[in-house]
Amino acid sequence: MKKIVGIVTMLLLAGALPLMAGNRSLERAKVLLFDQKWQGALEELDKCLASNPEGKDALQAIFYRGTCLKELARTSEAVAAFQQFLAVSENAALREEAEINMVDLNVDLWKQRDKLAPTRLKQALASKDKSVRYYAAFKLSYLKDKSLAREGIPVLKGIVNRESDNELRERAKLALFRIDPRSLENVNKTDRTRGRMLRIRVVDKHVAKGRNPERVSISIPLSLATLALTALPESEKQRLAAEGYNLDTIIQTLIKTREVVRIEDEDVTIRIWID
Image (cartoon, rainbow, N blue to C red; front, side, top):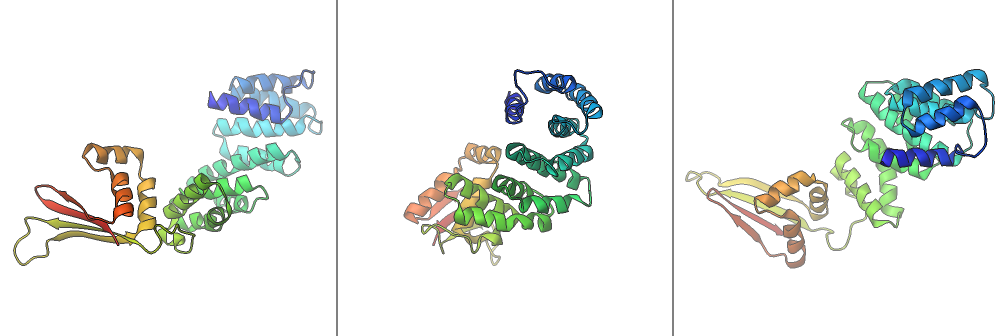
């Protein structure tokens, strides 16, 4: 349903659903696009462009051709189509859609070791369209190649420091945390967590005499700790909750009270506190 709504929106933005006759191949392609029949739509779009490559319908056909090629996983061809569209189109809404598609496509190409993909992704970070810049920075934050992911750090820091939408700012902080926790050192922090440290100690109850009983000793800035908890997959949070450990509740309690939380089992003692 979400994809269908997106296609309808795309068609409306392009003015592709008028109640008037146009290029017959383009009109047939619109119907096929709505039904997500990508190969059939692509064939009609190719006919449209072959019959009148310089006509008023050509730009729409090129954009939709890129969409079809993307859906058909013909990634390099889709990039070429969107590049052709972006070189000449002045339709702001469709340009944004094309640039966002280019980000997704070039991430796929990067995974296939395409040498030009990193350059195109960096270009997206410099787009005139703020939404494209933000989308590219968020997308890059998930890459395993941290050198490329770090290219998005200035955009993400800009979101944290300048945007008023708190949810967007928190997403940017999480993205920075994924790339490199150290990138958060000079980012604005709330007064509640600035300078405070989360301490975790795990002590073995059955260690031999004379040996260090401490299994784990962790000290991390509280601001990073709360981000790390937020970034945990929901499945992991549920698993911990099933074992009786609600980390969100523990952290929020510690922020308010600073009392030591002590967890005991047969083998270890876990102490968590904030100072």
